[in-house]
Image (tube, rainbow, N blue to C red; front, side, top):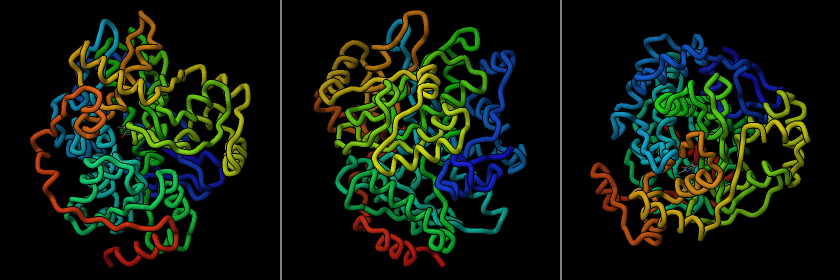
Length: 462
Ligand SMILES: *Cc1c(COP(=O)(O)O)cnc(C)c1O
């Protein structure tokens, strides 16, 4: 299996190479040169299998020769054994045909654990085989960083540096990043917003002297291996609800477009997905774009769903690549225009996007109201991100087609917003109850490439 860049000017890589590289050297994102697909009978036969068994079947064709069957199966087993629910991703029924897919039973209580726990295992195996070590650098609006630190802490061949926007992540998110004591993990609080964090990470990847000198690797949601791990729960949930005999729609609280793009891949693999609903908060660049208004950057507005507070959505480049019929030249041109503020999408590409994606935007007040209402009517306590997905999913749902909303985080990860909306303080699961007592360790850093690179060079293990 070969991987190609969305911008067409980087070398083709194998699965493990693409995973260890992250961002392509031409600035693009790696995508599989071909997307393998299942027959109807193969999907039917998934009914009744465990999460791990379906994960193996769905991901194995993408991995190629990078790992043996046994190695890959072992990584999957180890990745999900720390999850706090036997189903890994259980479904809860909200009303007659709307379901919640709970993706928050991993060690940091957000869906990022599904990909990050697996990627930790795959990195360790790949680097051990090669006798190499890498420096992982990531930007986070909160959940990616804690998931990465949890997945890589204490691993021998990896140093991890996570940039998060100072003062703009929840206290639980911050503490999950700053309290692990392992010497190979480093939390950096950057004076800026999430887009600044993401931009500095991109700068480091485009600074080849630095990139090669510290052997930079990326685990942000641009990493193909992360997208791949997220394809799995579209299959497990759809099969549980009767696919392939029924079509299923999904509503996905969206920021960087990784999670919802995994749904697109599931569809291309043969899963009968009716619609993918891109649910955004007041930072609605994706909703505007899918509605036909072009992709034009604005300022980031802080919200009560901070993991979706972005204006530049990295994985959207992959969606554009396919909407433009894999025309890397067209993608390069759009990304050049984006540097100057934005671009318009061609009529053909817009139709391709609208063929599968629906979209909606939820204001701050509506988010709180949704948390209040769904607790009252169903007894479910939703985190603000999940509430946005449920609200738009319910608004756009068609009676005959099951709607599955991805519950992307546990309500206890965002206790202030949940308590303000409901009066209920969501408790942390017992295994994390002492989070507020553990000592914190963090470096505050300027939004300055030089300062960040110097800090990293000074703190990697030699
Ligand atoms: C990361 C995250 C999102 C957004 O997911 P993307 O893949 O970036 O679109 C939504 N909700 C929560 C809780 C998250 O952590």
